[in-house]
Length: 277
Image (cartoon, rainbow, N blue to C red; front, side, top):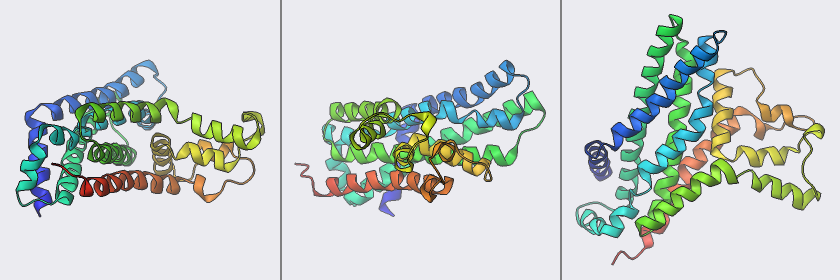
């Protein structure tokens, strides 16, 4: 269980550096503060509707926080040379990558749990009760969403040797998923159809699939699917004709798990063969 030693040390280092507490404060502000603001602005909102609002700020804040937590996990140690000391102990490179993944995931996990407990308190004060199932499901999906971006950051950090490259990668990834991703389906549509899609005519299923492949969009679909299983997500309502299986909520969950596992696996394969001398 050498990876567990790496994970524990990584988590403890994050706590000592106040990274854990900074991320927790940010999550509490976004979760509890966001729900309080929504409940104050709109008196007609129920507690369940207020919980549903959380997906919007989470798509912006959770990826940013997770990338900040994890982008230097391995690249920072490679640049400082401390990675050689770490590997000089009875740790394999797989132990290092897995330990870093779990350690940084624990930081995001603790912050998420505290934030949703604070959110439950806000709902209890504002509404006298809170929807346990909806809040729990939203919290679990948000935690998974955070772990996805930890995995992406660890994977990228495993492939880079300097802090500057890791930072550039983290910034680039954030803007890709927040701003740049929509260019991908739009560009593909233009190349295939010779124009831009018209919402009045509906969208082809493959175009909507490219949208859902963005983990931020997949997170929103999964949150809606698990809190409202019988409902139709917005992508299903936009499709031309019958919606195929890959626009259903469960498939968006598969997409999130692929994003969790694939980048860190590719990063490990690169890190396993790199010359650290």
